[in-house]
Image 1 (cartoon, helix red, strand yellow):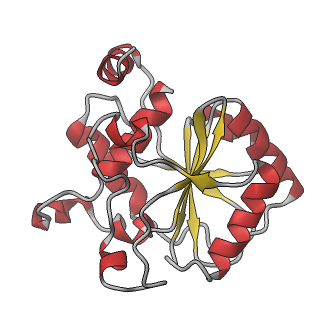
Image 2: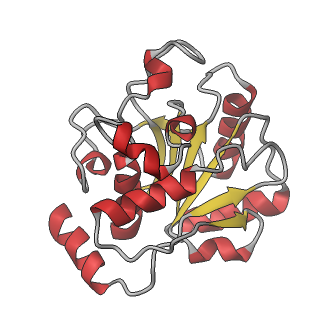
Length: 217
């Protein structure tokens, strides 16, 4: 099935609204980007015909409630250490078809969040590897010819002073189960949706691709 047809079929057949879910974990500052959910929800409503809940939810990573959501967003600045219950629940979530999107709010490869969360993800799922910029994720709704869009934080030399050309991923049976970003989309998307009118290009469009991919794969 083509990407366009798959997206169309999901939009037509889906009756329950998509709910943007932020993962709450016991360590660190899981709530460091409070405006991201509203901005992503606005983008879904603005660009697609998918039914979408007007507000996001916070879901404890150790809770069985995570299985209700096809996409989980996880971010922070501080060290991350999953509890045994969080790790077990996340492992089952990924195996059952969920997609965990993890974004480093520090944009720093030597930072505490980056080093610890990647270690935790490796123990839960396996090693993360670069996702090719030709992957279907970058074409499942909007087309990003060069892979993940660059953030202003990378271009302005904040954080680790690097422009990260790829996102990293862990795949389950060919499907992205974990997507990891060093690009700090959490800062890039953390503004009131009304302010999009001041942007020449809406930087939350990539979030639409994440949602569409999670719903169609």
